[in-house]
Length: 468
Image (tube, rainbow, N blue to C red):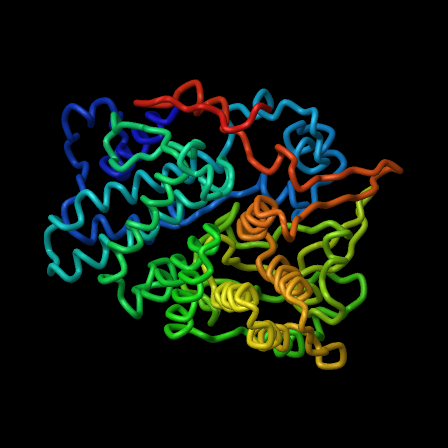
């Protein structure tokens, strides 16, 4: 299956809109087909929004950050295993070839590999232009590897990272490229090196929101170092990122401007999503599970309850609704959502955590409250004030999980905190009179590879990182 992904991408790159078969192309480029040559040909795959999509559906199900109907839980056993925290389910048996988290992400990696291999020799471009596209592809590839590593492998722990396996590392777009499942340490070293090599060539202002700029490079560096529990480096790059973009979107102002739509009882008329390409917080925009215009996923009633009183991000995005046997919070926005990219608010909250970790509680809370003031209605707002480190950190984590709902970050943070053991994340809920629990040490926190990947691993092998 891994080989098939790369073969498909090679075909798409080469054949364009022609109807010739891929096997024909591999031996001889068909008449009328266009093989990439110019830098513009390669750069087009950076702005191809299929390659920007990051699907982490299993993670949002596990966190209960996305509502799943009773009918779907009955019909889809894999969804049920994650959403209802079924420790006995054999997720490996349930996870067959239909797994877009894996295939979409590796398809993007293939496209980015193609750019990295060819951008520096592409025609009709200056060396600086070549280097920019090359560097942007490196950041995109590193982001994809970070996503799949933090989905299919255990979280980074320094004492075990050199022995535990992560995911296949593939650095060529060739359909026969080696596919080696490297250790977690090797993967993080590779990701960090990609960022390091890319940074000198990233533009301060990128071509579009889909292209990484210098701020995106710094912000992603900060995210990776935080996942490694390296708070010194995470803080360093958070500051550099915020020097590039420190804007916060004013959700209170958005609510006030749209409350005539939002506050109508029993109405689900949509306002335009402010979370799209042009949001001032964006370092880089990437799609989540969907790349189509529309409503964002619904969330469970229990999940909505974890927002602060007066939080207009909840009030502006979802409204409680009952359909048949299901009651949930239904989306009242329509448009695009930056669920796969990086925003300034994430970096602010990384900085706040790093400061709190260093016992600079007052500074950390100043940053946290700066974010909260743009989210909480004035009538409900109060500064969070404490001298207790654990209280401050838990307040930061609560805000961050709400801010980055529907993204990988709350999942990655929970796994990181559970491995550390000081600020563990666990959940419980009652459904149909039965109490369900997701413990902090559950094996469910790491997703199994799909069968299609393990049985058809391309030019390599894949070993499952979980037993079921």
